[in-house]
Amino acid sequence: MRISFSLIRGAITRSAAIWKVKRNDLSLADCFALSALEEFAERLLTTDTVLGDVKGIKAVRISRS
Image 1 (cartoon, rainbow, N blue to C red):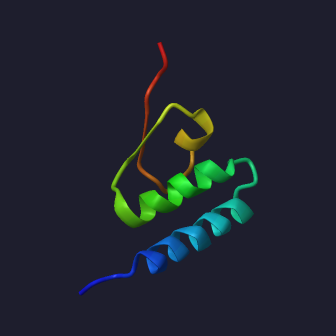
Image 2 (image 1 turned 90 degrees about the vertical axis):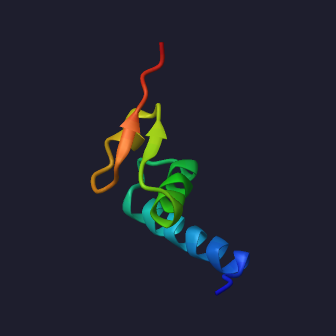
Image 3 (image 1 turned 45 degrees about the vertical axis):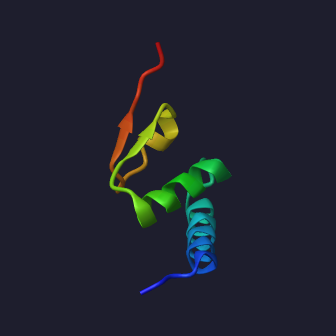
């Protein structure tokens, strides 16, 4: 089964928009990262404290030294 890239891109864009509506404190880039996480990954690596504290996702916060 072959999935069109445009379908995946549309699903991620829609999901990012939903995240942005629900969480106004997140940047648009954060919303796209969360959407990609839902679609492709199991964990999100981040240095962002706001993104690391989002409930319902598996995030690993990396401290900056």
